[in-house]
Length: 425
Picture (tube, rainbow, N blue to C red):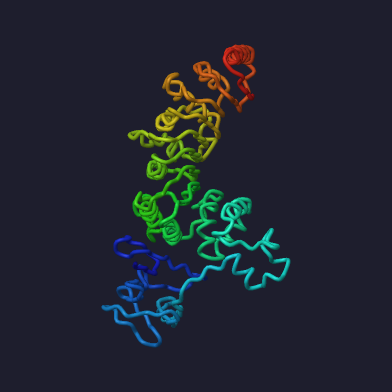
């Protein structure tokens, strides 16, 4: 394993796990790219200065052409400059990272204090292997916080608790630091040899920059880490996924497609928030890829929220949004579909569904539509199977209210002849 500290990412192959150095206040001129490389081989750590850099270990300038053994507690000094004049050294200590947990806090304060005891801890002494069924059942009733604490008691408790934690919790890749690979690596380490967390939330915090727009390589680093992390060899088995972020270009859109494609064989529920640019700065419609279809083996529920990055940009303008055809195709075979967000974009989505024909949504039993009411009713007129729930979230326009209302009544009557449907308007 190789780690590189610096301020410019080049490639995972060259730098391994790259850690951006982000020091405040930013008044020093640090030597760019790579300050130092630290590698681990057979449990031993080695250090090598980056090209053109000076690194001092315990007062000794390190060789720039060879690696030197590094131990926990060693101090490393890096040259820093201000206005191109030497400003001395920045001193860092190489040490083992420790993670404080709630259980550590309880142990430090002392469990004799009633204020710091874990919830429902009085009189509970469990021994795995004895009364196994009772032990497992009691654990299943604990809150997520107490389960996390119980997992740290001992190895045997961890084996019992970990599967429950995975069922009750959601992995959230949202609050990214500038070096997300450290969190990715931690997760990959956690899932080895055990059943993975099935529920995920992913937020894409960066837009893919244009040519020359990512000097430090931070966005490039994020996407390189993401591609590495999503590789099937890690054994992800994601059943529910919530995907959000902003889309300003076809490159951004491609990231969404790539992520959901990685989980096409395991996903059962998918929620997608498309906060998307419809028109560019010149007033022309953005063209997003339409070349690939999304085919899921086990998907049953789709919730899609579509909002423009600027709602005013849609006023009085026509647009094709051909990319919606891909997402409309996902509805095939689903039990539940929910469309939210902009009614204008929702109508465009429903029109795409209508084009696909009745057989494309024959398995739907629950439908929520945010679109112009007339477009929603036109789509529902093609639905022949009995439904459990239908929700139209936009009101009818006054000029069409009598015609549309009579259409609603006929449709409800037609549905009720076959089943008891719950229609919300």
